[in-house]
Length: 197
Picture 1 (spheres, one colour):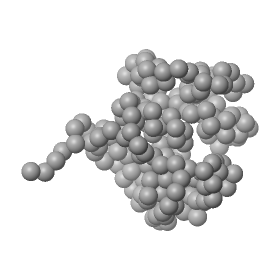
Picture 2 (cartoon, rainbow, N blue to C red; picture 1 turned 135 degrees about the vertical axis):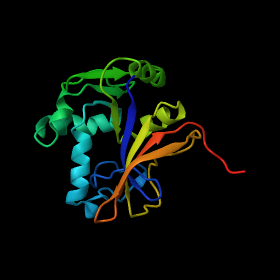
Picture 3 (cartoon, rainbow, N blue to C red; picture 1 turned 90 degrees about the vertical axis):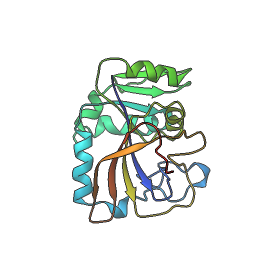
Picture 4 (cartoon, helix red, strand yellow; picture 1 turned 180 degrees about the horizontal axis):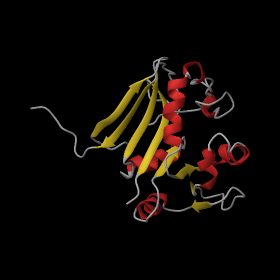
């Protein structure tokens, strides 16, 4: 069975919006695009490359796909596996792309992702894709969260865990703190939430 692995840059207050640049996603008047840049260092780059070099297919929302579609075919030297990976894209409006291989998922995306998880193939990596993430979390389809937690609060913006988040228990399987204070941690599902007596 394939796993759904969410890989996100996230602020201390849970924001995942526009980590990469000022124009990445200004929806809702978000003014802090590119907030991860001051915290970049060689250690974080090494950890990111390790994840990027694993076997994977991509599971993306329409907006993230639209940002990536013109960029990665021209920058395959940075991330060679991204162009060969199958891109599963949640969209009711976009149905085709020159960036192949791409498969477009419309209608009941949660049901379709559940079916894809049952197929043979590499794990499904989710980057960005805020709206899609809420659907995956609500339908208990995420197996692990590989998070880069930055020492900053943003106050507003799209959050990883929003309304509709179900109770989930996790265990930490790896963690590291970079010289610039980014906590890189992998949380894998661990069943029911333990409670005290």
